[in-house]
Length: 268
Length: 205
Image (cartoon, rainbow over all chains, first blue to last red; front, top):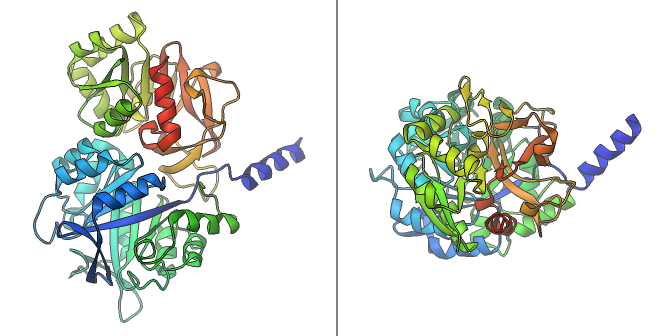
C-alpha cells in the first residue's frame, strides 16, 4: 500500500500536478507609454500599454505586473481611468503599482479591475498601510515591492521613489516586517541587475526567499532562459521579467518550455 | 439573456467579473442594492477581501436577507467566488471567528503547508481534480489549471458537497456545491479560456 502511494505521488509530481511557476511580464509605465531602462535609468520607449496587454492576453501569460514608475515621484495618484481601460482587456491576473498612498487608492484600483496592488515607496513611508490593506482587502491583494542596491560592504540597501531615495533599510528586515504586517507576496528587484539582462541577483533572491514564507517574485536582470531556472533554484516562487520580452525574441511560453525541460512545474 | 446580479460589497474587483459575464453571454448587473436581487436570474458573489469585513458589509446593506430569499427560497443559481465561496460556509476563523451565511456545512480554515516548499498565500495556477462529470465543468478537462489566490480554504463537512479538489497543502476543496449553490475557490474571471467556459456553464444551468 505504501509503495502504491509513493508511486502515485511520484507519478503526480512527474505529471506536473502541482502549483505552477508563474512567469510574469512586467510593464513599466512612464509619460503615457511603456518604458524599459537599465539600473532604473536610461529609459527607452517600448510601446503602448494597451497594445502590450492585448498581446499578453492573447498569449495567455500567467499574470501581469503594471507599474506606473513615476507616479510617486510626481506626487500623482494612480491613473484609475487608464487602469480601468487596461484591466478590461486583461482576462488574467493583474497587479498594479505606482502612486498608491492610501486605502482609498487601493479600493479604487480593485474596483476598476486590478486584482492586487503593488506598494513600494509608501510601504517604507507608512508601514501601517500594509496591515491596513491586508485587514481590509485580504493579504492576497497586497504585494510589497522592494527595490534594493548592493552596498560597498556587500550588503543590500532599499531604495524607494523609483530607485532614487536611499533608506538605510535592509531588504531582509523589510520583507520580514511586510510579511508580519500581512503582505501576500514580496516582489524583490535588484536595481543593479535591472535591465542588464545578465541574470537575477541570486544572492538577494535566496536571502529573501529564506527570510519569508510568503511567495517571492524575483525581478531584475533576466536575459536568457537559464536565468529563470537559476532563480527558481534559489527559492523564488514566481519570475518577473521585462527586457527579455521587450528586446529579444523570447516569449514567456518559450521560457516555460525551458523550465519544463528542467522539471519545474509550469503551465504550457 | 440571463440577468446576473454581481454583488458589490465594497471590497473587490467587480469590473473583471462583470466583463467576464458579459463575454460569456450574460447581462451583468453590478449592484449594492438588496432589492436588485429580486429581478436577477442568477447571482454571483465575487471575492477579494477579508471575511469579517465582507460579512459585515453584506449585513449592513441588507444583503443577507435578500440573498436568503433569492437563493434559498426562490432557488436562483448562485456562484460564490473565492471569498464569495467562503461566505456561504457556516463560519470562518479569518481574523477571529465570524458566522457566515451557513448554506453549505463547513468552516473556513487557514491553509497549512504540508511541505516546506509550500508558501502561503497559495498564489498562481493550479489544477482542479474532479472524478465525476459535473454540469459546471462541462467541456473542461480534468486537471485543468485555474488561477488561485487565497490563504484560507473551505473545509466542507459533507463529502458529497465537494465537486473538485486541488493538491496544495495536502488537498483542499476547490469547488463545492449543494443544490443551486456553487462555490469556487479559484477566479474563473481571471482563468482565461477554462474560466470563461465555467462561467458559461454557470449561465446555462
